[in-house]
Length: 95
Image 1 (cartoon, rainbow, N blue to C red):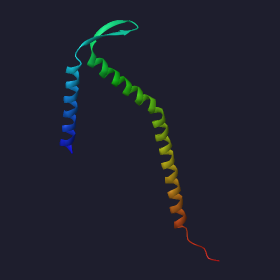
Image 2 (image 1 turned 90 degrees about the vertical axis):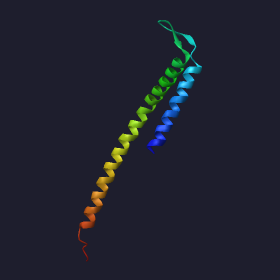
Image 3 (image 1 turned 90 degrees about the horizontal axis):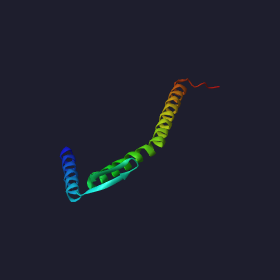
Image 4 (image 1 turned 180 degrees about the vertical axis):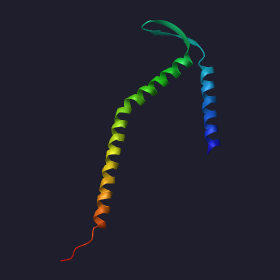
C-alpha cells in the first residue's frame, strides 16, 4: 500500500512538472493594486489552490455542526445504554 501511494505521488508530481513546462509563458496578472508578470502555470495552480481553500471553508460550518450533533447523539446513546443496563440489573417483582 505504501508503494502504491508513493507511485501515485510520483505520478502526480510528473504530471505537475509536465504541466509547468507546457505552460511556462509569462502572463500579466492585473489586480487592484498593480500588475505583475507570472508564469501561467503558477497562476493556474494558485487559482486551483484558492478554490480548494474556499471550498473547504464553505463546508467547514456544516461539518462542525454535524460533528457537534454526532457528539450529542453519542452522549445520549451512552446515557440510554446505562439506563437500560440499570433497569436490567433490577430484580423482577412478582405479585
